[in-house]
View 1 (cartoon, rainbow, N blue to C red):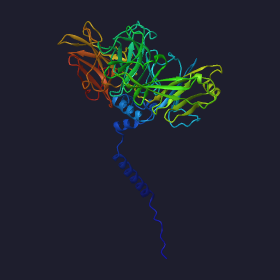
View 2: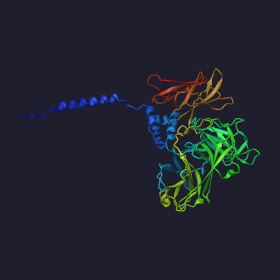
View 3: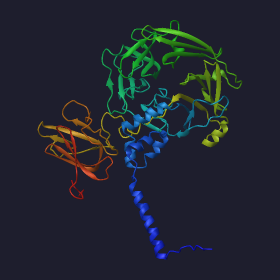
Length: 522
């Protein structure tokens, strides 16, 4: 019998074989891409929830700048719209406001629902909101936009420093065709006007006055609702004490008058979307009647009426303490208590099936007080926002702040020493001074310029003229009609010199010589 013996390699030969295998593995690794392309990274990020995007801003400067780009925000918005909307709930007490996002669908009757996320808002400077959740954003009573998913409050410019928000009226609308939010503002709820103001959010433009002929002379007299690109609100025409419904097309910025159903008072109705149309719903709690008036023809002022009986098989609920908060995208009517006493919940009523379901968010209020460190005698009020979706808008507004003029602390003004005006560039051919402003804390191609000595406002640099970059130096220099300043392009770790032609307003990146930059180079 032949006995096979295990071949024993010399120690140095075994070491050489191991080194050769390690070298081959290293060569294989080098053949693979060393990084994920940015477009694939952004595609992955657009599938994440907004709170994850908020955390991922800290990964790198490139990620932070990239998720502020309009292309990423639009991609995130399209994916967010395809997801099931949630129901946003806020509970307010003397110590602050508590925010919860809950599932809106497929929660059985009597179930306790856990939130997707929750947080507390401290140092609150507003008590109530002026809108529902309009494509993920909410208008507050202090000239601020609230993005609950990003936990951000974004201030926009005051339309008139002499007008208090208490005497004015504001509405938030959304144009789904162009993906733009707009704020409609009226100086007074007492005086009629045909020239309200409008502001497009996120574009750095200032308030615009609605042109003559677009708007009937009227005054707003109640809350509004926006859906399918149309904003509806209660109003009164000049010289008429009867209420009407005014519609505002958010895209075209034209107004249209809609008469209320005959024989119906405007004060008892809630405006809701119903199968893509405007509907007015009223709830009569002693009799549990739900009446629905549906607008069939806005130009002919034709309405149809439906009536339902709301069955609430819950003995512990005081029906006089619940109120109508809106409808879900599935057509259910949502009711909630004004205040929170022992538990907080929402009741959904499906008129097609004539069925109800009660969803509990917190069964034991004492336990909720204990977790939040609240006193036992704290009273809570509750606000509900159905059909809430996550919105990534807000990243690109952080440094803009919707200001009509550049913000001194966050915009860098590149300077020229050309005699009379400092902080300016000079065009020697036309004899004009200009001020160039570039955001200093983010990459952008949206710089702004102001020509001094003429009655014009700040202008955006035309698309395609300015590379996506940010300034990295503290100052610049201007001579022969060009401003030069140190900058860094998006996706590049090396500094360059950015030149700006004061006359043509074109930008041009210039590489440093050799291993530059040389300190100080200006």
